[in-house]
Length: 251
Image (cartoon, rainbow, N blue to C red; front, side, top):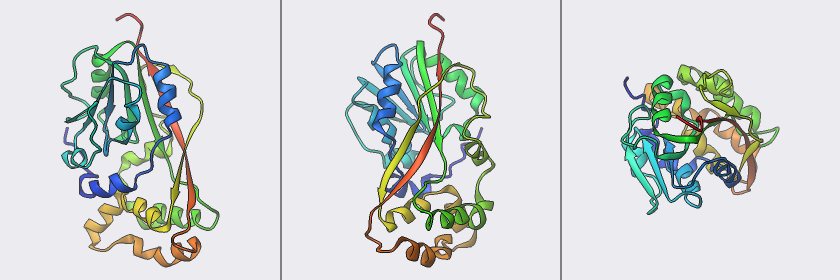
């Protein structure tokens, strides 16, 4: 299978502008694990998930098929970064307590990935996958983002994006499921940080590559007017759609 690399080109921006997940999410996931020796953050991107696991695990293996993403990831002595696809890794069999996948499962060859997860997880080990949709900021700004998402760059979204629209609820998930509590991301953005986030979208980058122009120009004036003072701080909220699975206690 060829790796669909929609993110290497904007790896530095991805690291700078992508929102961070709440630490309470990682606290909760750790509480479910049989041990705290080693976690695997798969499709780690800029390493934000891996960094959030540092307080809980002795070692975190953080893999991504994009070398550019790994080059822009935050370094830490407990994190072992590896440029590897999700479906085939060098991780030892039955060595992982927790597998996390943030906003990336829809890109994988899932049958092969699940086989790899079942190989590396310990008995009673946990897999957690999640996604999030558009941020909610204000009644003036949200419709502009929705228009940008659907009408301006809509045709440039890969078909896999539909699985996020379905909140990962239609994805096969061959594990004993655990019903989680609800979690939400909250980030504090200036206008330029919000626009920077929109610029990291794979659809934005594909639009630029195809048309040699930045689609953000089409909303810039309206977005700026709706935002007001460009340095004013606004809260952007996104609900996390989470699925958690558990390996059998004996394999």
